[in-house]
Image (cartoon, rainbow, N blue to C red; front, side, top):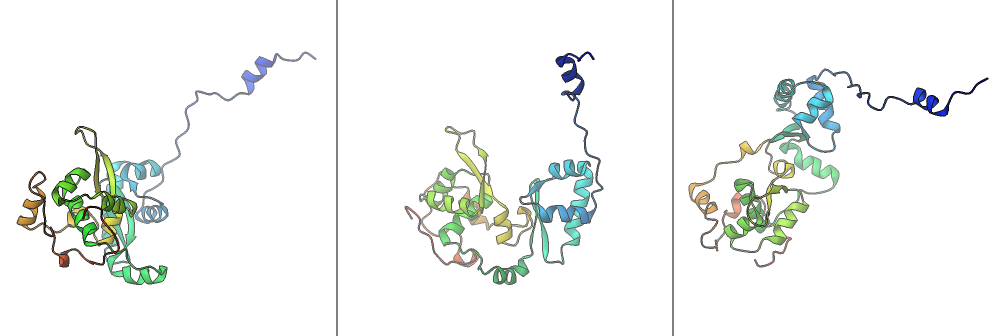
Length: 226
């Protein structure tokens, strides 16, 4: 018996390296399927990710998201929308009961943190330097605290010299204040809006937002320079 050359055997048995991977079959993106997907997701999903997973187009994803948002309005779960990303979160009215179950109260922020967070929320995307110019105080510690707690997130870098980071609000901000999107943020008072625009003006030496408008005022943080 004549043995075949080794190279010939390998060529026969080896799979074709250039064969394209077969795309998985599409899955119907029903409202129930979308809710289940967002429920098990460990992070916010983009519309594109949902479309790729289901093998469907953007219009279908948008339609199902709209249906789900309406269906959840009177239930204990809400659909949170932040730009292109979506996520499920508990409804604000269930927060106290959920917090009691997990054995933790809602995170309490100091007036300094709340003021910094408000500036980021209304000026985003904004650099730390701009926040500090508006507040007239070093805000490094406060910004790091808000980043650690995921109330704010890095959105990229500015084109300004030094390419400083740009910051905006994250999903924790929406959940903490009972918002489903940034569009639900209350409009600013005209005077406050003008002061927020005074990035290069005189440092603000009095509270930018009255304490009663900032939620809780319990202070458990320090702030360097303030």
